[in-house]
Image (cartoon, rainbow, N blue to C red; front, top):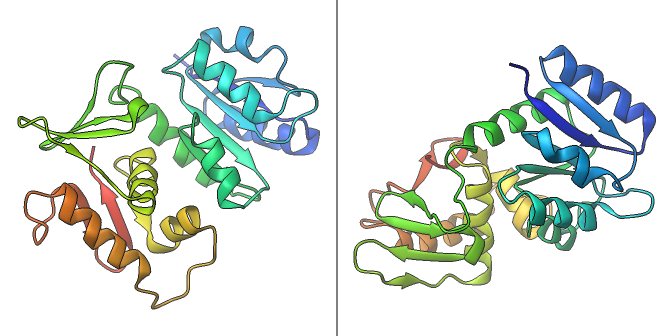
Length: 226
């Protein structure tokens, strides 16, 4: 059975080529040029792709309405905006955030990750289990099992871990993580991310010297296994 996708994009040129590409990959696409009918059209969809800049209701408002009505519907935000504030606002409800311009292969890969996560994304009262950790994504809480101890992260640690969880099972480069969290270009050799990962592991891992939650992928970056 084909996967039904809700796609909301007001730019007709972009909308036409993205819709055509997704259909070529086997998806069924409902394409809207505004968000007014999004909630109604999403009822039979398995995921939604949502542009931020829309006429009438903006993408943030549409996305929040979709998530309220369909809490388990994966949402991928598209935007030409690159500021960290916009990304973090989008990730308050969206499951991923892709900056324009993008390659269709990257969009397709991200959709596949979201669909794979469909069975493991935490439900409203069900935590995501990562080894000895219980992650309550909607409540932004991390609890150690079986002690019940709650782990408190700093702002940057939280955003790094949240970004890794949004791409659960996916290998992320240092550049991707740094630019998503800090909103600035990554400079080769910068140790800032590495230091934050080390401190994050000290809080999350049973043995930070042999991490089982946040993996290092040598020469590339990091991954949280599903």
